[in-house]
Amino acid sequence: MATVEVTKENFEETTIGEGITIVDAWAEWCGPCKRFAPVFDKASEEHEDITFAKLDTENNQELAGALQIQAIPTLMVFRDGIQVFNQAGALPPAAFEDLIKQVRDLDMDAVREQVEQQKNQG
Image 1 (cartoon, rainbow, N blue to C red):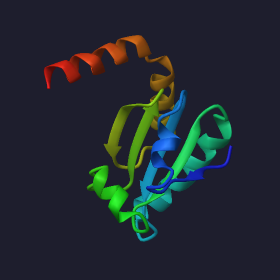
Image 2 (image 1 turned 90 degrees about the vertical axis):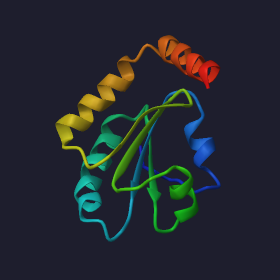
Image 3 (image 1 turned 30 degrees about the vertical axis):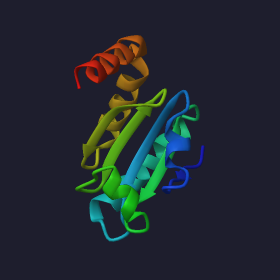
Image 4 (image 1 turned 90 degrees about the horizontal axis):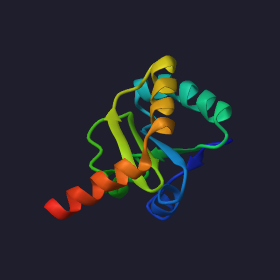
């Protein structure tokens, strides 16, 4: 599956649906971003059931700020509309595959319960 470009106009629509969405926040001038891009692209071809999205932080500074992205590359993973991972730094291929497996293996009922508990505490 080809990657989707996300902007402030389509970010929420891209990440709130059912299933897994992985967002790569990057910039053209970022060396680690360029080195991670082939890893991200290869994974997008191997996992056609997952939405892979690219967020160009330079062209979408308002959205990057709203998402509190402070370093790039930053990976954000959403499952069933819930953010389950957010970390700066490029991952090597094996670690990225492991992350995808961990997200697939999540017990989403337990995750939803945790989210609900956090809402009730705050």
